[in-house]
Structure formats: structure tokens, C-alpha cells
Amino acid sequence: MADCRCLYIPLVEAERCWSYAMQLKAESNEDHRKRYHMINKLRKAESYVLRLDELCSQVKCDARTKLEVQVSEEFFVTPLLITVRHHTVTSVSELGELY
Image (cartoon, rainbow, N blue to C red):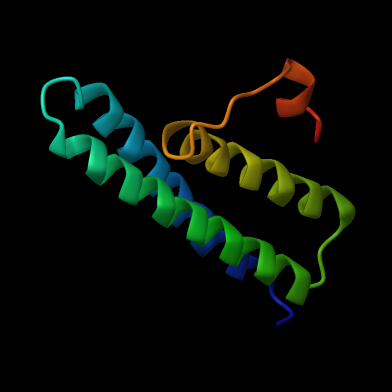
């Protein structure tokens, strides 16, 4: 693939799933079923961002784009790790390591 615009589709899909999951997280206090729906949306966002990482390796991208893909991968995967896998963050530098 020679066109970098193909990277926008999985990025927008991941952002869409993540934002809907954050909306469900706010509403999950009322209904426990929304928590499961939120987890599924976070998993779907994770799959889109992993697809974005694969596409980034196939398309000729500069170093800045590859770094932004890595940061977005951490950004979208971290809520899933904290919510589902009960991952604890040991320090702020662990989150900001890519910056």
C-alpha cells in the first residue's frame, strides 16, 4: 500500500469504540450490563488499534507517524488493561514512556 490515508479508517474506528466505551463507563453505575458492553467496545478498540499498527508497518510511514501509532495503541489498550485485567500502573513514567 502506498497511500497513508488507509491509516485513518482503523484510527477513527478505534476512537469511535473508545469514546462509546467511555460513555458506557459513565452510565455503568445504573446498569451492570453496560459494563460488559463497555468491555467489549474496549476490546474492539484494541483490535482496531492493533490493525492500525500492522498497517503502519506495511505502509511507508515516517518516524513521527509510527510513534503516534504506538502512543495511540497505549492510549486505547490501557483502559482495557485497567478494567478487565486489573493491571496496576506503578508510576506515571510507565504511562508516559512513549512521550
